[in-house]
Length: 482
Ligand code: GLN
Image (tube, rainbow, N blue to C red; front, side, top):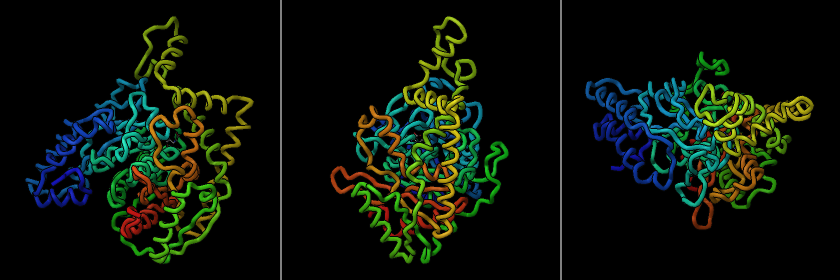
């Protein structure tokens, strides 16, 4: 019995039937990591003691005949921008190379309270800035479907870990697509809830008005269960929403006939033909399920990339000011005075992409340029959000490709940052609007090696239940294997 290929309900069944112990489930994952992760390189660090201690606690509960919490014995990987008490949290940056978190993020705390076992921290682009995990300050992660290719990013380690059965589910962060795009590249499910749906307490800030924590899994059901566990108001994050969390899992099997599915024309223009074909097949599945397909328009889509890269860099330049060699992590050992210490620490501690964003962000916020760039981008952000609000008067969900291109080769885009930014063209819109988005597998490319493709589904603010219901109907109808 391969314990690493199971879903959350399957793990639960093995535990309650006493066919496997939680310790065996965790050990099976740790064993697989020792071999398979040498080529995938999804993890930056492992936490076997913490995972096994939690597993034994679950096993004692089972032995005593106690009720099992919802995520009992489930191995979870956590992106290394999310704080885990007593474990390193490096943000894949040299500047935090030896930083040990003093507390747990709320999402981590809620997962462990629900019985999950944290097996390790996953690789990502440095401070979550990137779309391929190649900007990690340590090493790149490889796509388990083809090791010569990227797993997407920035949460590429989390995506690759779940796709390669090195964890059952994972946490990632999504600011402009960093959960959805790696989920698409790795052939799994990844979701970002509404802004404020999940507490950001303990998520290292990149762009605070856009940052989210969210789940990865191999099924919609697993993702729904993790989201349900981590969502909800948290007094430690004033932007977390005080909106009740529905039972997402219970709602998954609702009938989708009559659901209005919007297809925005702006996302189809100039589409890669293979991705276009797949999306059409996916739309046909929804039509067969009795959904009403509607053509819609989101007219400000073209401005989303420019708008996103102004706002996120502006916020990043401010958020990253705290890494000064005094308060956290690395400090350069050679310097002449205080200013020189700041300068050398930041020069040696940050990688090229992080520096590029700090400079861009400082520029767009500087006096004389603020109105032309930052303020204008904020206005465009409102227009993009309004496009969605108007569209959701006519439709219940919107479907689009997750990425304009299939997983690309390692190194292919590293010399051209603008090309890399364009990979986010379909994901940044929802981030700017604050609406929820999910990426689900949607077939593969035709030529060998056959690479995963993803479909994205959006819903209106706090309508995660509807979004998950549509994704689940698509999964049940065979959409993942299109
Ligand atoms: N790829 C996007 C960026 O580089 C998104 C990153 C993210 O969502 N964290 O900013």
